Length: 210
Image (cartoon, rainbow, N blue to C red; front, side, top):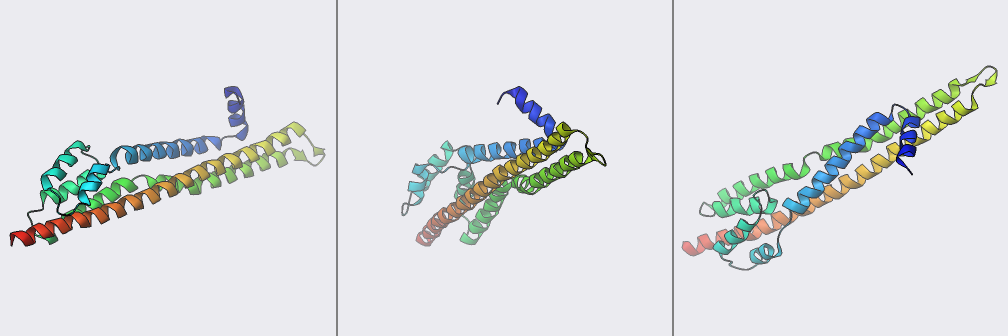
């Protein structure tokens, strides 16, 4: 389909395509932003994972591994808080780690509400386009019968296009929302699991010093 055909279809669907387009752009922008976030800042290098899983690992080695990670890396932020507070009592370390994990969760969940809103709003806007298109089609049918057959066809086409576009946008947003929600859960679960390993190591060090 050429650009001219797409533009003709856009015009045929009526004014409801404008808010639908806005929702589509918002959803696409959020999906791209979340994809970049998880690819760039929510990945845990294999060497860090292997080190944390090692019994009685060296703190300096962990510090060197964390220096390679970007400052905004979620796992790097989480482990740095534990590393910087490991000389404090364990309850203090756990509290600081929990606070940092909560802030990371807010970062991962940011703007997901937009996708959730689009999932609900896009089909409703498509339904509105359907109603407007059918109203336009029925308006062309007067007391004397069919006044403008071409106009009726255009009204029906407007209704079908708006519905299809609304459902398509909602489906894409739904898949994106479910995917990133699941990814968020997996990331936080892995962070909690590894955080337990590191805090156990803090507890072991403090027992050895005492």
